Image (cartoon, rainbow, N blue to C red; front, side, top):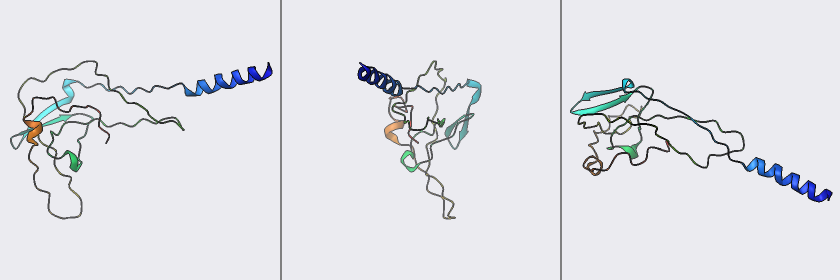
Amino acid sequence: MKQSITLLSLLILMSGSLVAQQMTQRFTFSQNDLQIVQSNNYDVVKLNGTEYLEREEYAGQPQLPLKQFKLLLPQGTSAIDVSLIINSEQQITGSYYVYPVQLPVYLNFSSLPPFVEPDTAIYNSNNPFPADYIVDY
């Protein structure tokens, strides 16, 4: 009988440590935080508190605001899933030609990289961009 109680106690303790923890990070943006500025026949989308993707693999894609954040996980744990819940959306009226992501500029005093034209596969598509709102940056 003592062995079964000990085993049961160990199983209860082990199952408690396997329960998934959920962490939530909430962001709220207002249309007042948004600004669209004309630059060389393109529209540059600016959103307070955000930045842009600046990697070579994104060159030519529409340069859209990016909200980067980090979560500190408890020691010994790892993230197994990340999801995004959008509570509301607001469409921006008008027609825009969004500035394309450019190649990064490195501080080695060489010449600036050439201008990267918009990726026609994306800019001529009727599909929403980006297809996925979560980027592993």
